[in-house]
Image 1 (cartoon, one colour):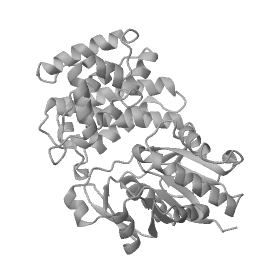
Image 2 (cartoon, helix red, strand yellow; image 1 turned 30 degrees about the horizontal axis):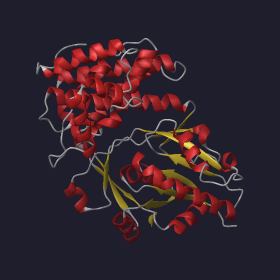
Image 3 (cartoon, helix red, strand yellow; image 1 turned 45 degrees about the vertical axis):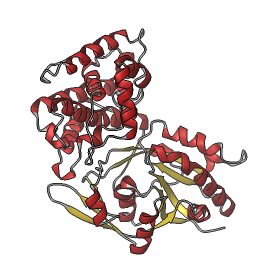
Image 4 (cartoon, helix red, strand yellow; image 1 turned 180 degrees about the vertical axis):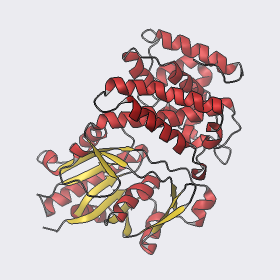
Length: 408
């Protein structure tokens, strides 16, 4: 038996959210933070220095020193397993593309923990923007564990809603300090209180909720949708603008974005009447639009809008909201307009380049709008006939290079 270190968290992913959000919250809450990552230069720097900076980008800049930290390289599976065997809690923040690689390591660590201390449950905070994350993690872990492993007794899977905005850092900033990370002041981690087996950590910034599905959908259909709409509508209005605060300084653009978010809010109010009221949703929208305009954050139209296959996907922020509105017989025209602007989105990064995956998306667009609406957005030509008709009208409108002043 090895003693569990209740004030130790193992964080898979030493990236922007891992360091600026999860690591910051738990370190400042008195925890030792052990980062697990594949990127050796970051792990080496964490171990060499034992601390890093989070630069809070606001009207008045603040620098936080995050200490009580160290790192373990993800390839050192035996070391990772030993860390998991004594951890008080675990968090995962590797991004959707990195999830596949962590499940074998997590499963191995759970087995080592079981051998060392078979009555020590472990809660895993899933700090990913992933719907039904708990079910997905359960499926992936169970198939890698022995049949006899008492999963439901020993593993708590805690869904979250990640609302913190962390922009892409310029090369010069990363060259200056490989560990520093920029973030906005917002520092609330919404998580599922029913996902915990152990007591919920008493840490400032954790906000446990009951009906987690409602809060995940609020993040997707208000925050993510509004962010994307700002980028796509802003680019359609003026493709030469670089920063999100620049496009939202245009009255026409911010008005369209606000109305799009309000249209999506109707979905939440119908689906979750016991969790949200209109006043709270409107206040949330106003707060988000103010946060989106944070000049100090330096968030770009490119960062917010790129990765089009994912962001225009059938269950993501825009198409997902349209599907929900259609099924509830609610209006969706403003959300659809933002989606069509997204199909026309061609912003580039600081090096004048597109994402490789976005290039493939552009090739699909050249073939036909129909293919994008069916293959990417998941619409059916017959069931969603009115959506196709309106989408084609909007597409012709954007192709006509008219000023972006029409109200849909």
